[in-house]
Image (cartoon, rainbow, N blue to C red; front, side, top):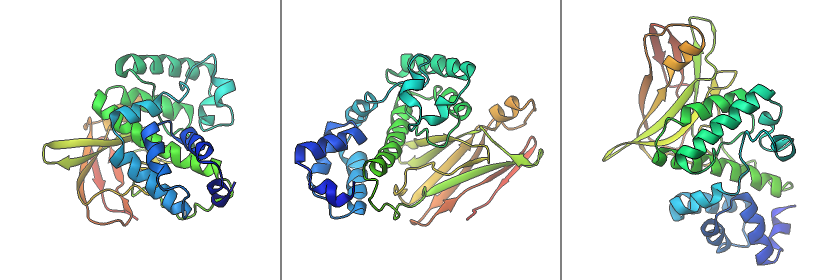
Length: 282
């Protein structure tokens, strides 16, 4: 379907299709004020504006209820095979059971299921991310999960409008990667958390996990720009070294930096058990 074809749908049908991309009544209502859409870029801009500035906690929580539970051992194959969570579908029985157990613990603590943009993530990466996020408080998790939902929404736009043009979508405003210089290899499966400095302290924005290349290419949803200000990335280096049977001196590494514009920011970490360095990359 092209955007032009989508624009010819009855309003009720178009609203239903949008709801399938993000299950929030407030969000859909906000988008439908601009229907029909002048371009794919307008659709994404309106979706982003509505999600971050017109929706709130209740709306975000409503959208979470329209996701199946990642790691449900009984329904995993039929629900997730070939879909956004394909990385989980190919997992071993042991990993599936661990995901199911961790997801149950997560839901018990927060009252909603674990929301993650699963495309491109292996089951082991998602399990590691779930285990690191379960230590967050409820406010942090709602903010992290709503960002993951927006990533999912943008992917579903592209699946709904398969013949539309989304080439304008930019990569994450901020990216990072970790290199373990003591081993000469990428620092994979390391949890990384992004904070913004506010008048009252540090506010959590998102949390990710490094992939097999030591990178987090989509820390933020495409087209989400960070406002100018001071931010920090916190790398869970202690957990990484423990998992790799190594004794590290730093339980965490914190890197503060300043965002000034909408250009791409890449903040890497070079780490060894007794030292680290960073720089602004490209």
